[in-house]
Length: 108
Image (cartoon, rainbow, N blue to C red):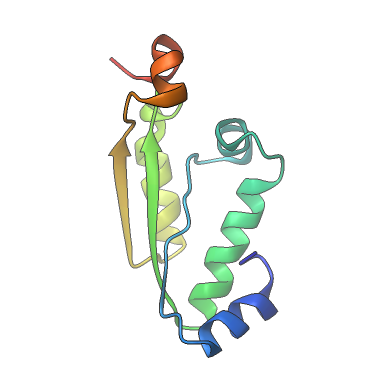
């Protein structure tokens, strides 16, 4: 929703001051694969840009999994370029689908 500048403006006007989008990859192929939603990388990046352009505080979270852990430096560089206020990397919790697909999801 934050890829819409109008939605961002309305949300900030309603009183929201901090936003926490999740970015799981350094490129669209990686992020969209992990979210299983085509176009989600571009929407997330656009949302971050929109929010920052309006002076909002943006704090991101990236879940570290087998398919993105080697790209943590690239993800961090992207987030710095986007001027996010804070970002964190959280190791995947081996529960639910991550537990069922442990060997494919959880890095060693």
